[in-house]
Length: 107
Length: 115
Image (cartoon, rainbow over all chains, first blue to last red; front, side, top):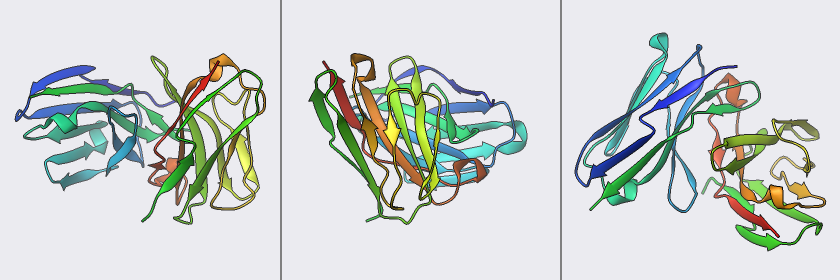
């Protein structure tokens, strides 16, 4: 099956810093989503982005499908950005999730 | 508001006492699915359904049952819960099949503890 690798596994930032999270996948995809799991466990849709670039406030994402990677940019990070960020791509009967990047933003 | 609703959000129960976690979506989605999330193991699919009366096993179906009698509802049934089913459970839905590009939406999660 398709492999999804996310980097870095952990990231600690000061409030206000910028960061880039990466997602590599092993095969062509027609579905790629980024999720944020907050400290309370809720999974929140950030982007549906099988290709191209999207922006939503301080967050943006780019997927280069031909090179099999996606990037999530977080600018001017806030403490509420803390949590785990998952990339997921189409698998056999659902989405295949990466192991996530755990982000901690300190005041 | 478009959403996937799960209940209960938190539950502590004892071994062997049957329980049902309900899931309902108001987006007229055809595809629905259940996942469990465990530390170090990530999100694993339990069961999925591509339409009413059509269900199939995911990666970890043992100990679980599902039904899809109506398009909007997809309950997860634990007939005889055991401690290894202690987990965080998510229901999800999408208009089209995720592997064909359907965007997946998750419920808020149900944290289950089996003593």
